[in-house]
Image (tube, rainbow, N blue to C red; front, side, top):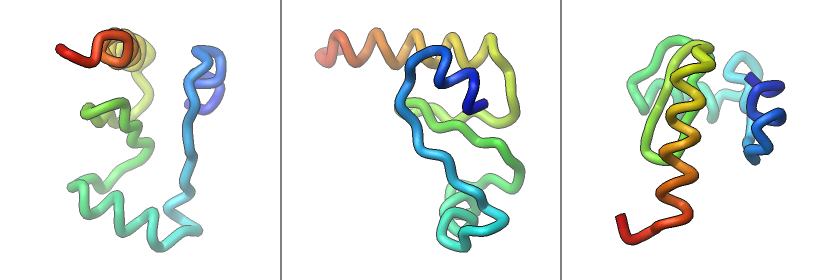
Length: 69
């Protein structure tokens, strides 16, 4: 995941829910019980699905370049 986001030149923050209780609590509060979870804009994606990640990034980039939509 980190490699994919870096390759796409997307800034990100990574959290280790095994070592960070706050990150774990935030994950649970969002209704997730599995990792990885990637939040892109308003979308949350679980697992590693390059096609879904690319689609979410394209949507995020489009909304960032046209905030009135």
